[in-house]
Image 1 (cartoon, rainbow, N blue to C red):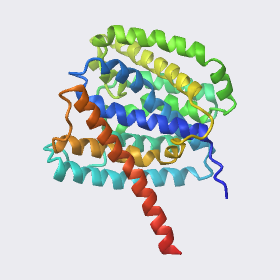
Image 2 (cartoon, one colour):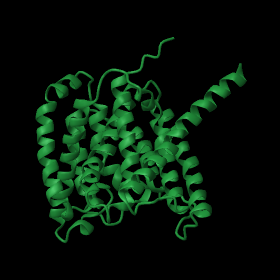
Image 3 (tube, rainbow, N blue to C red):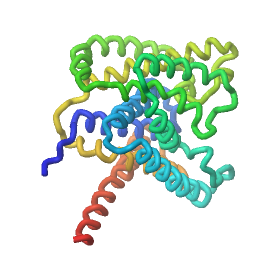
Length: 317
């Protein structure tokens, strides 16, 4: 039976997960590789927001019940958080790591957030009401100094607008976006120029969605305007990416089916490289080689999974 996948979305997910991995690879060198900061800032504004957008889109299209989706994601978080904690305690020898399900390890906030977004999606009853409301909530969240990373509360609230946008997205809008991609790209180039020009004044922490305004600026209203700007820029760059993603199948399309495997494995692999002094960054060549090796290791997990699935099928037969 032919696999009737939508390769447009597979291509988008394959591109996004590559950018997620790449930005996390270069994150430790932003202090010494200044030229990478512009790429990092621009990419970070949209890669997770657009991923969350796609999660919202597929949450609505899914035939599974909300309970089933939320339960599966919650159990996945519990299991992966457990193994992450073991990794940080016994492999990384972290002095602050502990077995907890309240504060997710690094990238696992996304799994926690999906559980909450799946549950509240049952109450979505109007795009404008929920989108405008989610923007207001995202902006108000920054005034609270206490939520921070506690069960990913800040990120759940800050990135909620993208889940809402995806939930109400209709595939026919893709053609409209593609027709306007040149204009959107020009706008993106202008924004990119200003990011390059003033990136020494931009704190990458603004992009992570968990800092309270008091840590962004001494003036809370300035902090709120910065967050609003980041949200708007994220939408613009997300539209640009959606405008240029190809519709047809290509050699990388199949990776869009396995983005969760890449997402869950890449942070452990990057941390392992750093723990065992394999993360060489002294020269550009060393950084390039390190990046390639990490990418090979990360994407190898997909092929290991495929081999496992094929072997499992043979055993069943």
